[in-house]
Length: 327
Image (tube, rainbow, N blue to C red; front, side):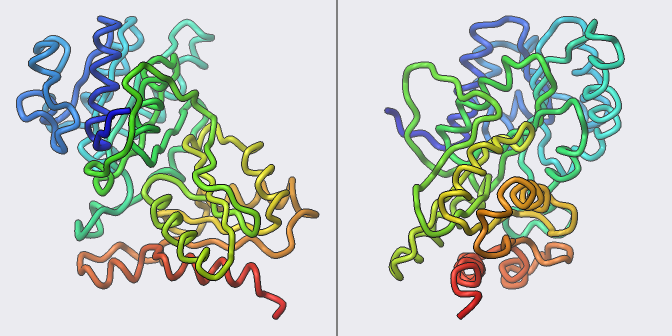
């Protein structure tokens, strides 16, 4: 096992896939000469040259559309959004063309394209650069949505996304790029739609993804000091969702807390809660608890930002409400 940062694992995944398949290319703002805004694409221009690693103009709608056209022509683009806050400029191309083209052409035009970049709040970036888009994107048929939480998952899932013949939205986080973890030196793939148990437990199921997994794990460790054994589930892919893994855990623990870096209304967590209550209602010993961003814009001020987004104490409090509601 090698120890890599999250950014290194993603860069390694792209380099390995580009070496295998000459149809794969990377395009986005500052991905080439500057090695990427977050250095995820470091070294790729030198390794593969300017025909396969392109610096684009500052026009997300434009280069997203170019990538979709390239996919229709038989190439396999990777499109980097410097942040999904900028990626909303490309939603017309992603939602109306990438997601629908294979369906509307009766299968004549599969769209093997990956749109990747950071999503959600980071640290003191202000309201316009701290938004989470998974609820919007997972609501669109035809898009697969992936959101890894570790270097191991990031590499294995990105390789699977690049090989997929459908458009894949790959949600990262600025706050995870420097995180380190073990990554196998041999090739491996993590199938899309397969979740993971980050920590086994018996008393309560905590479901979260992306950077919230790390707060959930910290909360689980804190709870263990009080003899509360929490299971932490990471779906890894939000669309399609590994519902069987979630239901199996709920039927074991009988209590659920969902943690997400998003607002509560009509969120992915709300959908997961709905599915749990449809399929596991008789297995629940308490209502599903949810820990989300407070329903306001993410402040720039550091203390205010920490107040708005999910925290370890809020997760611990939600778990205890689940366990001790009748006491």
